[in-house]
Image 1: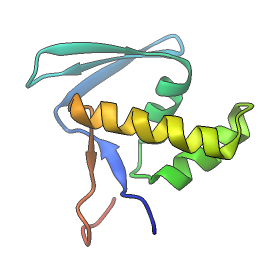
Image 2 (image 1 turned 30 degrees about the vertical axis):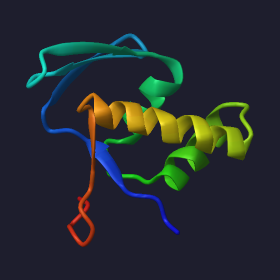
Image 3 (image 1 turned 90 degrees about the horizontal axis):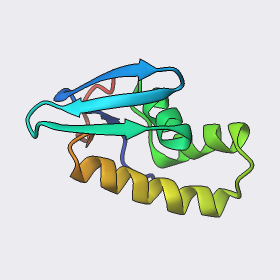
Length: 96
């Protein structure tokens, strides 16, 4: 089974500060700092991607086992979705 496709929320403004990301959820009025892996994931989401695509890329960049990567990134995506930073692309919609 393929995991859902994730994309950045349109309610989130962000800027890069060096290699880190500062994101602001406008609706919630909350600011988030992302560094290292979370910043890399954010940068990968310039286009919608699923867990497999994200983990495939992270495994190329970082020294991480595929199973550990999937578990950690799955939790990160849940957290980012709960905070309104990312959204799931509706099934059957144009992902671009």
